[in-house]
Image (cartoon, rainbow, N blue to C red):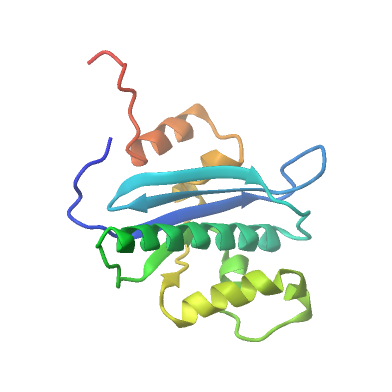
Length: 168
């Protein structure tokens, strides 16, 4: 159910689980996006290529989450709600955030060059930011790896999800 939180702020959480698939060692990435404090989209999917590091897996997940935030911003714009505020995509991987903010092309990031240039362009235009979030506050963990039932239920509460069929 959607609630009025008094704003139309667009933000998200992204996470990746490096080599999560036991069959092909592809990483799993996932993201949640929020509009006005309400959960709008969520996705969990194996990445199309094998990542060579956890930072690469996180960075590819950040690029996917950034694309979804931009899509939501464009939908809101089409509906007449202009977003001038920087959108935040919370990530718990400092290496992925460092790659996003690094203006110099290094040999170690050649394999994610297109994603790096895409993210660099959005950062320079101040359209998106990548604030760090501690792992225990990372909502997207439930989309990428197994978590305890306590963490899962806390995440459902934070996401504003409720069982509409539960007895009151």
